[in-house]
Structures are given as C-alpha cells and as structure tokens.
Image (tube, rainbow, N blue to C red):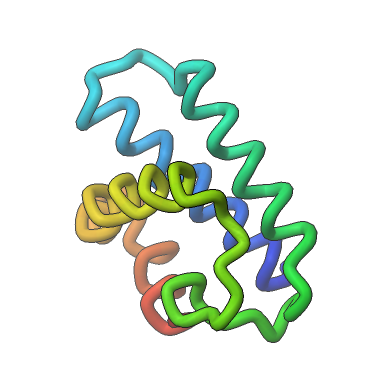
Length: 97
C-alpha cells in the first residue's frame, strides 16, 4: 500500500473515532464526510507523492485554514486514542512522522 493510501485510511479512522467517541454519533456525519473527501483530494494532489513529509512538517500547507484547524483538532483528540482502538495504525503513523 502506498504512503498516500495509508494516510487516507488513517485520516478516515481518526475522523470515525472522533465522531463516534467524542461527538457520540452512530456514524460519520455529512460534515465530517466532506472533511474526509477534502483530505483525500489534498492527498491525491500532494506534489511530494509517496515521499511526502508529515503534514505538520510540510513546507506547503495545502489545506484551507478552516479545514486545517478542523483536521488538527480531530488528530489532536484521536491520535492518542488510536493506540487503544487501532494500535497497529497508530504505531505506523508515529514511525511515518
């Protein structure tokens, strides 16, 4: 699996975790589905491809400021909890930073 595809999957998992456990929703709502679609679009257009750095360390911020703030809040909340709900993905994500 390519790095881009892996990043897409991790974003989906983090958003799902956030929606279910933080917001108490039974499934991902439309607002967060749109955020996932936006993240996928940005990852598909990443000029670095499979050599991309972690978004936090990237010299090019391709997200709109509002979307960037939203995804950062989700990752800040879901990241530490990924070790409980999906430890393999969490460990891989840490090593890919």
